[in-house]
Length: 188
Length: 339
Image 1 (cartoon, rainbow over the protein chains, first blue to last red):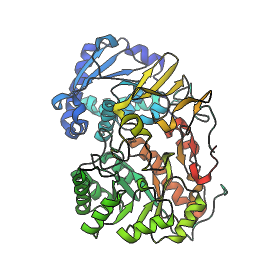
Image 2 (image 1 turned 30 degrees about the vertical axis):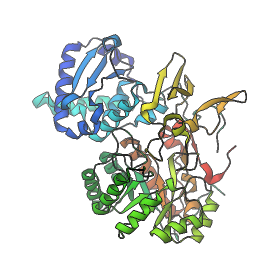
Image 3 (image 1 turned 120 degrees about the vertical axis):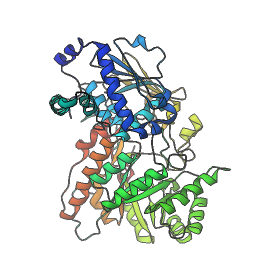
């Protein structure tokens, strides 16, 4: 089992990141992704117009996404109150969210382990999860591409750093012991 | 029945049949070692009709081509029951499968089996688990009348009963070995309909997501279906799907799982016994799951099936526990020890 929680020192550093330039950076990468993955919007279908709010549980910023007209609109905020008209709220550690994005972790398994919680329009959440899982998006690659000639070293450094964080050996959710699972009588 | 592995080299190798809800999942399953992949169209004709899931005809054809490169086969599930006045959708889907080059169609509706057998005599037909064919007479009827070549057995039989059926039928059997576990007879369960008006049998959805809601409270997570509370998970307890059959209710003065606990099927230990019982194919449930599930579950069972020829037993319970509902597994009715 890999760790999905950011170490506190990394979470603390991200508190000082200015949101406006970060929003521009992520939006630009998302537009590249949108152009390369037209099937994603087709699969999302009627749910493209929904407002998805993604809340990394170990960071202090929140992302709102919508996908109308084959474009990705992204807004960042430090407060959930900034998105009162959201249709969906998805909450999980940032590393798990990144793993979901590139298909390294199973959404249902994250839900079973209580690492991921959802509120709001369950149909829209499923549509987004399935569309993302099919799209095979390498978001770190897309972000690194914005760095032009430095894209390769930036991508490999970022991936190596994330890999080290993922492979730290502790339980993903210390509250749940997977050897025992739920309490109560079970069939053998 | 024993958990000791049996050496099975003299027996025919069993086929590993794996799910795919998206083209990416299909490629993942093929790459992980699936012999056969089953999938469905993006409509009410298949029993996993969830938003963002399933295939267009073009995606199916690309999937068939991809699988063929690695000598894998594609099955297409058209396994809901055709709705009155809308049977053209089911018939068109059967026509599409017949022309797609898929290995077989998996059907449940007796009328659609008749249509497929008469209209496309060369189309290989499998009988879906949704048909709930649980005895030799019933299976032989489908095989004789419609030329069904394989039946997916309902998850209500012991290994001994499966062996007895195999001794009396003229077609292949496929059994579930891993994944979500219906505790009711498939194709006949009305619990989801009772609550939401929609069922896997007619609409392809059990507990349709539009009727599901989750609410996070300081000390527990609550899941509801059409306003009916299905479960409350205290902090620290693994969660499960919001289905009525695995809900926790008050009854006779106690609160508990009235129908069944939230667990998934894992019959890894029973592979030698299933092989000895004459089973042709082993099926993994989970078209609604993501690529990560496919990669891990399919690769694990590939190793377990391949190891049968040497008598090796590859333990999968702990390895796959995080992917199972409630993070617990059961051998289900293969070894009946239910309360």
